[in-house]
Length: 276
Image (cartoon, rainbow, N blue to C red):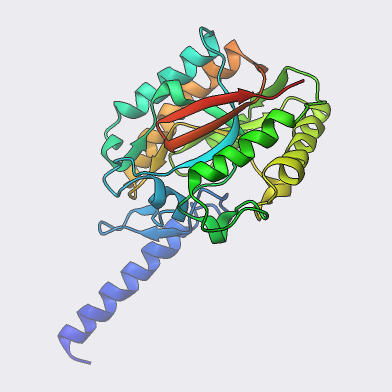
């Protein structure tokens, strides 16, 4: 073996050893918004792959794309301490050193999705009402679904009671959201039943994760990998803000679900409230 070959082999051994050591610190399983750990140019472990729906909603520079659709959501309660605390978390992400790697959402759009609805960018693979032509304009889909919403009667008792899931929110995930859980088994059954009815009676399709759908409040979409230092900063921001959110609202009470249409992720136009 030549001297140069020996140096090359030693470098390869050290790089492989470093990769094994770093892998010990990475989670074995990641949720739907996370990606398999890969390596950036500087060797830092990161969540590198951008999910498809994120790329459809934002450019790699974090600029919103046209992304029209409809949905059933609950906006966060306005003029409330919990909304103020969540907005403060959003502000911290805006002020972070990695903000340029995010598609950041305005705080007045913060909401919890009850049923994601249809969108015009990913019709065939994500979901589209079974009885509406796949080529129908988005406006036509909105009108038909809106008519069904007008005739729908909600049997579930309000308010919808949920809570921030501390473990899942502080656990490994892309820079994205507060993870939300129903407040108890009764609330879980209420939400799951409402989602089942929405899928059958109103939107008339189910997504692949319908039964296991994880409720959340989106704050941002991560477009580019974080360095190890940026990942530490993100974790510190969560550690600082999330316990304060839970302290002011151990249980968050959400009002009447809203049927909304949207042109992009910045604004959700309320078209109708579910009838009780």
